[in-house]
Length: 594
Image (cartoon, rainbow, N blue to C red; front, side):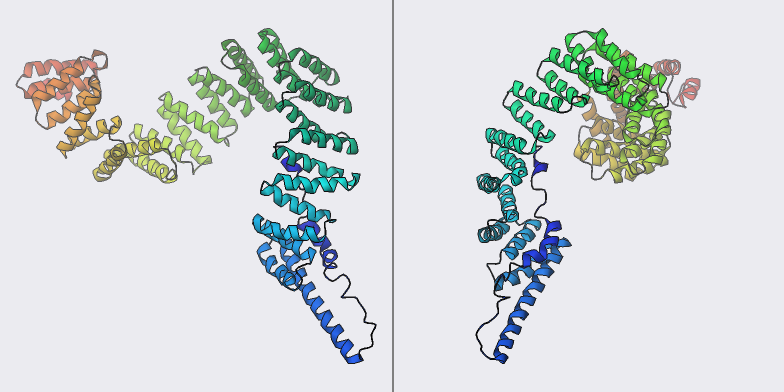
């Protein structure tokens, strides 16, 4: 609720406590400390009693002053015992009760503070600061009715307290009494005059009550109070637009533009109105007026255009127009990074990934300090399979953001694709460390899966297997790991039962995937189960669109092992023409042998 900041303007906080500390103290011994004995009781006895009274008073004053000093240095826990010493001797001292309540409030002990604040108020109900503190404590405990009573009494004391009506109205709102809040706001306005914040609060109440006309009346009051200020006209226009009174809103906007023709917000509001009316030509005209304004810097124009794009929804025509305007703005302001980012965002929304990637790259060159730009750029590099760009851009991003785990992950991925295994391991391990607290389990599995590949590339098979097993523990059907782990085990001829288990699970999940069928077939081949390997390779060959040179070569190897060298040679030659087979293929074709 926007009235919260109007509550309790620290009238009872430490600043005024410090200045009034001695004044408060004067109430400790209002008469007895200064009373003169009139009876003649002997000089020695009189002097002794006077000295005793003075000593007690000075001791209490010292304790109170020490407590105030702790309050002023924001050490309420140390202040409380000092005030307690005073209250132990004089529990009816209002100042000490009030100071104790303050200290407890600052310590977060609202419930404990209330009895002390209540005692101070009961001892001196005319002290408005005591009333305010007690009211604040009641509000904190949602004892709104009791807080209302305190403020109502305060307001009845005279018009000089009218400003406290703002706090009372806020409490009425807390207590779901909007009509009483309105009545109180009106009283404050009668005493103190028109107040912008009060007017806006009244508008909010009327809108919540669906009293649109009343809310508009409040907007009209603001306009009348400053007839030369176009801002109030535009605020009122926004209110009218939000409540489907667009024709009246246009009138208000036109009045604002007569006061100041260079109001970008006015043209944006008109663009929104005409968009809803379906008049896209007028929309373009209004926005072009903003974009052509030489007095507006490019970044502001970009933000205005971005805000308009947020209004357009899924309208293809509006999006097309917005993109055209963004492209023109980017051409006229080629060195403004915000403009480039806005254009890139629009290109992404419309599926133009390659253009968006290039535009983000330009924005990053203009201003490399924007994390989101690097993130979008690296994501698009990956989606477009631009590995060289991913490597370069991730290195550039890490120069600016060396502690961002996602950027290290992108760098590790790029190095892995480039077969730079040590660099990949270094980057992925750094990413894993930085993202340890990240809750994205899928991301962590992705890092471990790539670490498995990278460590395998380095020949560190123990760490490779460990990384793969970590993924499978969390995700037993991770296709990437099932495929790579089983295949690499077969190449090493290590733990073949595990390789067979993983490969079988893979083809059960994907019985028509040529790549996965080939992986399982090769594990069977290494396990010398040639007949079964042939069976799965022929299933892979049925997917003619995805048959690779590797699959054809493997099929030839299996046929050779099954005693069909002529058919094997035929498959090897097909693999040669297909491309992508092993470096041993030429030797197989030349000799007709494995």
